[in-house]
Image (cartoon, rainbow, N blue to C red; front, side, top):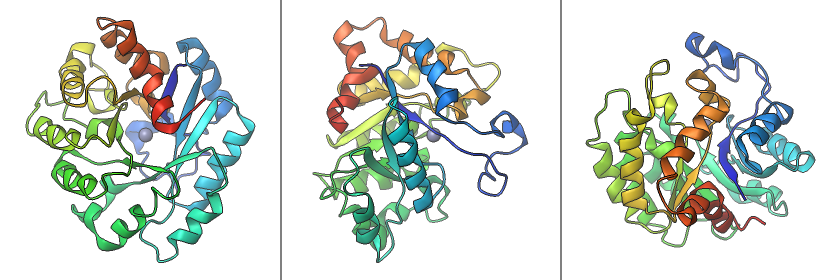
Length: 276
Ligand SMILES: [Zn+2]
């Protein structure tokens, strides 16, 4: 099975999507399952995992509703307020829904660089194992040392790093991002999505060779059994079409054995989230 492990849906409005600035004007429209379906099919993918974009419980409910009516949506990474005293009740609401696979918080936008280690947040994370949910880590390279400490506190919790922690592809620098990746990848309970990378490159002029050194580091540190392809559609459209974004990653792995390709293009996600 070929699985796109990271994409978004939304009904656009300027208030809830104020991060879509003028440079990303192509994203100022609705993106719904009927927009994704032909893209998945053309790229040879069997399904996707829809990831939250808004930090509301309604976002989680809405994505689960979409997943219930679109068989291509294999699962949802939603949002609950992990810091809330009420978090258990929020998780309970979704506990019977097998399409909810994980939770994400937009940590990259939190003003506190040590947000992941705040006591209220840690308390929320401590509940996820019981609900059989993964947690998606969305951070910048500066947060990697804190993230390494964070995941060590929950050795049985399954984590997923989004977008390789957004490496500085545009600058061409590997350091100190690669040191941070090495420390985080030491925890075997962390998987990593190869997604959103073109968006970190020069949107107009990127070439595969700009991105490949970062994939080399990811493969070296995480190994082939913890990497998962993702499009970050529709956000990827600022830098690459759906098929171009997916083909760049797929072609990188064509020099590797077919079992490695199968792992990264779907089997690792199937195993992590018990998808059938
Ligand atoms: Zn995304």
